[in-house]
Image 1 (cartoon, rainbow, N blue to C red):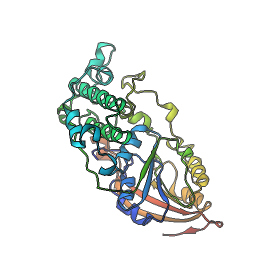
Image 2 (tube, one colour):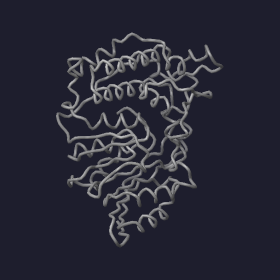
Image 3 (cartoon, rainbow, N blue to C red):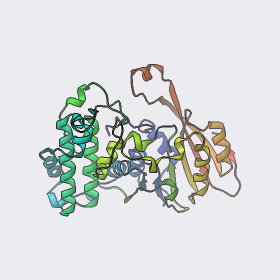
Image 4 (tube, rainbow, N blue to C red):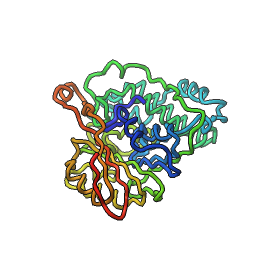
Length: 347
């Protein structure tokens, strides 16, 4: 994946899977799947996986990573390679992304939104319309459509004129943003266990006692629905009313309690306590809203707890000033085994 995603576990995914262990007959439920790094590792380790994220863009990115080539034969377009090649030949059109997220936005407003060059924005519009057309004509399946949308989001991200998120655009064109947008094919294993996808609020995700649930909630005030709003628009293929200098789509209905300092602790406690799964793994950071000692005490009251320090990773750095000021962040994995008697186990 080419995403710099807030809270990404790409650098510590192997350590997480080592603690989760081998498949035990249940489903691995990745309830905040993000870009799908942990879900993909679990799938490759032999788990049946269910990915879920309240953002469709994240759910699609994750789901595309837990499919096999057998799941996406692209019979209607002869092959996956042909589908990607056809996308790259699509005629650019001046659609919604061009109108709102390129300098063309100054034609109907006071702001020249420099997220994409006009040509790249038109290519995004043309490709997204082509994917929709293929699906409506049943030339691609739902799974194939999601793979192509994920490929398009990755391609758009590579040429986005941002510091890593879509909370705002940069005032000067960066070198990579002037490159021509080009969709690259993804690689898929020949076979993996069956995977499913959901886009529910995390409190609505269903699981069974025999399942293993992995939780990677937001740690800080950054609301993902606002920070990745353009990817969400590409995933949905809609044309929402946008506002402000940055043209952010409506997002507050997907605001997360985990991003508010006064709500985060109770939100985590309520979620973990409500899950029927006997094995729950929670990733959390030393820079999170909830102090680690307080979180440990809370989780120890729900089940048998072990806490594992994985490694220090660099804090998210959106710009040079942040890079110079940032220190490393400690990543912890809380393992909760639900039993009748709550007991904390030091690790």
